[in-house]
Length: 207
Image (cartoon, rainbow, N blue to C red; front, side, top):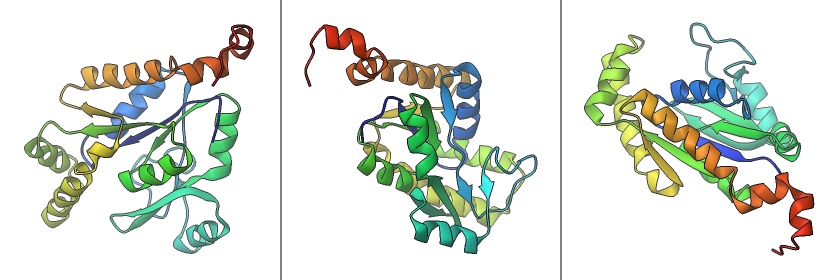
């Protein structure tokens, strides 16, 4: 599907620092807009409906899924997540860059429809550091943490499906890497032609 905006897909296992990096990129790069997914999980402390997620119950999510409202959807840790097809298409067609913060299953679905999407996987520096971060949250029991670590291993095995892999060992370095990916994507020929159509028509460049 041809669009004038860039689509960035960022995935990572729980505890890799994906959300922190994404929020820092959004503050740094005003050209990127975050796609707010729908989810059936309960809000965490400090989260607001319509900001981090659109929180819906299972029945509402199922109805949206049946109507074909979602570009992609997935079940993660017993909760459902989905991306609005109509909202995303509208943003990209208007020339806006959009970032999807989704898991590898959703990324695989998105690539089928948007093969030019820029996919990025955030990795923790080690499993030991991943466990330390998960325990540092102070939110989950030991059995839940162990389950998340096992799930993280399974998720990280899909890193080869992504265009870029960023190691989040130093937060500022990882942020610089993520920003560099966004900037380089805008320099791709397809993006430049979409942004400067008159110039490229003048140059008579053909597909």
